[in-house]
Each structure stands twice: as structure tokens, then as C-alpha cells.
Length: 303
Length: 325
Image (cartoon, rainbow over all chains, first blue to last red; front, side):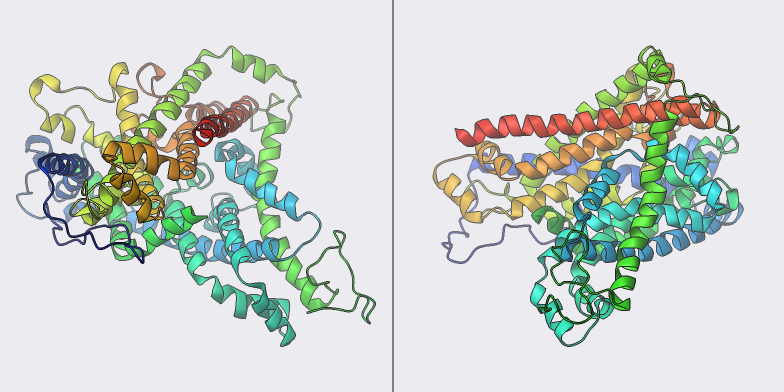
């Protein structure tokens, strides 16, 4: 297996613990357990990697090669035809652009609005504060499905059905409860003295937030932003119901259409190329940011 | 900072009174509350809460979706729901998903998390198995792949003629995985599990790392083996995380629309993979029965809430007994 130089994962040693760490090789039973662990983890790694490898290899193959050849064989020639076809003819390039616009705008907006809302709920007392908090909690637990039909008509009335900005607003609204919840706890944990000091120094509420409190919340913001990004990038139901115009499709819609579309029964290579184009940016991003992501998960669980 | 209560500028106490710093109606504070609270709340109320409220109302009507006129028909939609065989099939499939998927995902994720954090050695320092960083990164891959793309990938992996699975299996074991009643639902469950294990593994790893190392050492000194340590130390210590995981997974399984829609667009052979949201989608957008579709949606919400309540209750009951012993 590759990656043999990865660092071992270990529980952090605490201060004052005895240095009994360096015992010799384990007993025979111990070794059996270790071997079993590696076998189990190795099998799961294969289950994860093999389908992805298969998709990746097949994306370079011609249809004939996919149908007649052995599934995990290397392609006879590394042809990029499928990628070009998917990107241009199937408008995956357009869908990618739409996704970047929608997710980028929605992410920026929801982080700003979510942080503002969480800040007010966490640091000010006023009538209705708890009610708003519980309303947000309700918004988090209800299935999106229940709302989808009336939402369709709300957007239609507003005149933003089947538009990118309509989709952006919807994304923001549905990502808001999660964002507010996570940041609420975060803002509550920040020391109150600092905002009071800012107020004494003459900073208004706006300045206190943007120049004092928001910078202190950067780490919490980063964690929520990562989860929101993944959630919005992967969103499928909302665009399928609310964004049906072909030119406005986002990536998830375009890829799904490869499967259900009648014309693609024989176009395996094209479909695989489309899948690779969709996965690769996120996978690369994950490998680059995986340390931060792990930090985010642990932060979420410490609460 | 204190503001004299009877100072100049008439400090306006808002209706709750107990402001941390008594606010005045200055431009700064009015604009602050309008924008900071008003703007997000308006968007949330308009696009999330208002549609939910409407959906509940429409569930009592026979609204078709296109014309503006409809009648309020009381509980007729719900009566129809109780006798709807297709709905019952869909509900049954969702319940199967909500039982099997969380159970399998949590067990696998728990075992893997234990192996990569404290499963390395039976004695001495508590470490994970070698190369655990690699296993952790790879296991997390599926989580960053959009659900719809996982669905697309596996719809091809399970393809009876050119799929990867049949390509790797010997002749006798090949199946039409998604096309026959006996394997369609288990195959679909596998895809959801495939996508979820990595995330919950990471969640449990983080939780296990928060347990003081001394606890594990003490257990080992007292002679506890790996299984015993997991059962008596790890699981009780991260019980809250397991409960959270169960609720999230259950809610995801009670939905499962994306996977099912991509794997078997039509609901599978004999509706064997049809789930409630798929049925709702079909009713609302291809059969124009918005009123009845809303009733299905309300039923889904009720099932979800009942499920969350059940998990809380079970956790409290079992938690009570473990803690008192």
C-alpha cells in the first residue's frame, strides 16, 4: 500500500505520564490483532479506492475498450477526447462555472449573515431571542422536502425561479441555521471584556463587530465555511426542483443527467470523464486542506 | 461600561428589558439590529419557515399546483395516505434504511476509529496501527464526493453487463444488482454506507482523542483487553457523539432521495427502493397533486421527529442504567 511514510496516529501523551512507551515488539496474540486490523482497514481502503480508480481509468478509454476490456486495465492510449466532449458538448464547463458562482456567492453571503445573526443572538439580550433560536433549530430539523413545493412558488412570485441569484438566496437561507448554531456557541465563548473595551474606546456596534469580534472568530468561521462549502457544492435537491433551465444547471444536475439521459446508454467514457471533472477539484482541495478539516471536526465535537 | 439609567438621551429599554448594555435608539444601534438580525431573519422566514407553514396548510387542500383554485378538504389527504400502499412501501423502505444504515456505519466507523487511535498495541503506549494516517485520509474520500456523484459511480459499478463489480466477480456470482428485488435495496444501502463511514470515523477519532490517555492506561494496567477497553471505556466516553451520529445518519436515511433517485430513478423493481421523498417528488412534479404531496411531506417530518425522539429516549434509558451501575 502506498503512503507508508505517513505518521502514526497516537493519543497525545499527557504531562507526567510514565515513559513506558518503548516496549518491545508485542506478543504473538498482539501481532495477530495487528495483522487483522491491517487486513480489515486495507480491505476498506480497496473498497473506497477501486471504484474511483476504475472511473478514472475508464475516463480515458473508448467505449469499445470499456465494454470489451478488463475493468481495471490501463487504457491503451491516454486519450482526452471524453474530457473535451464532456466539457464542451455536454456543457460541463458551463455547469462548473455556474456552480462556482452559486457556491461562491452563497458561501460568502451565508458566512456574513450567519456570523452577524449568531453574534446578535449570542451577545445581546432582547425580547424574542429564545424564540428566534428555537425557530432556527426547527429549520435545521425539518426535511427540506416538505418546503420544496411552496418554495417553488415563493421563488416564482419573487421572479427569481430558474435564475442563479434565486438559487443563491435559497442556498443562503437553508445553510443559515447550521451556520448560526455553530457560530452562536463560538461567539458566546469569546471574552466580553474585549467588546466592552472597544465600546469604551468609542467604537460603535458595527465597528466592534467587524474590527474586533469577527477577527477573533476566524477559526470558527473557517470550520463552518468548510462544511458549508461541501454541503452547498454537493446540493442536489434544491437545484433539481428550483433551477431547471439547462444553461443554469449546476454540476450535480449535469452529472446526474448523464445517467438518466437517454442518449448516454452507450457513452460510458463520457460519463466517467464527467465524474472525474466533478470529483477532482474537491478531492484535491480535500487533500490540501485535510489537516484543517480534521481540526474542524474535532472542534465540532468538543462542544 | 455602565449607562446611567436616567441619563440624557432617554435610554430606551427594549421590551425584554434586560439588555446587557442598555441600548439607546441611536442610528448606530438601530441600523445594527436591522441589518444584523433583520436581514438574515427575513431571508430565513421567507425562504425556509414560510414554505414550511404553507406546506402544512396545503396538506389540507386538494390543490393541484397549476390553477389558483383549490378546496380545503380537511383530513382527506391523510385518510388517503393511511390506505396508500405505495406510500406504505416507501415508508417501510425508509424505516429499513434508518435502522440498517446508522447501525452499520456506526459499527464500522467505531471499529476503524478505535484501530487507528488506540488499537495499535495491547500493552504500553496507546497508539494506532501503522499507517493510520493513510487509512484515515482514504476512508474520508467518499465524504468529499457529492452524493449524486457517488450514486452515478455506483450505478455504473453495479451495471449488470459492463460494471466493475460483475467484472471482478466470477461468473456464478454475477447479479443484476440494482435490477432485482432481492439485491436492489441492500446494494443501495451499501452506497450510502460507503459515503458515510469516513466522516463518522473522523468524528469518532476526534472524540476518542479527547479522552485522557491515562484512562486507557489505567484500564490496561487493570488487565482490560482491546474489546473490553472499547466496550467499557471508549463507547461510554463518546456516547454523546454516537447519539449525534445516530440522529444525523437516521435523518439522512429517512431522506436518502439523492442516492435513490440516481441509483434507481423509478423506485426500483417493484418499488423496492422507493423512498418517501421520491414518492413526494413524483406526486408533486409529475402528477400535479401538490396537496397530497404536502401531506406526504408532513408525514415525513413527523416520522423524522419521532425518530429523533426515539433516539433521545433510548439513549436516556440505557444511559441511566450504565451510569447508576
